[in-house]
Length: 82
Image 1 (cartoon, helix red, strand yellow):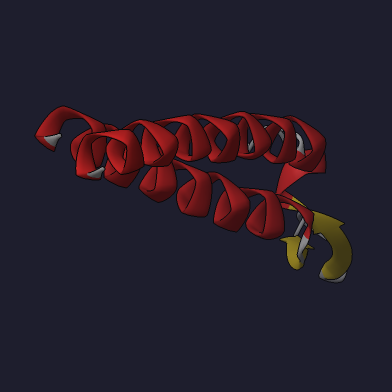
Image 2 (tube, rainbow, N blue to C red; image 1 turned 180 degrees about the vertical axis):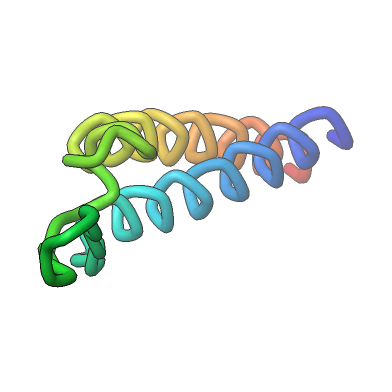
């Protein structure tokens, strides 16, 4: 019973974290570029395009897999309770 509960908690936490990463990867950020002798330039981009985070789609797919894993673990915990 405890193993199933722990598996559920871990999978649910991972799913939440990956969903937050997907959102963060696609949010716009302002990148400031300053070159000598030129005015400062601001460019709107995303973390995903800058390469500092993976793609939002990849995080979404991984989050979905974790949700499925949490569902399986929860079903296993329910069987123990009967």
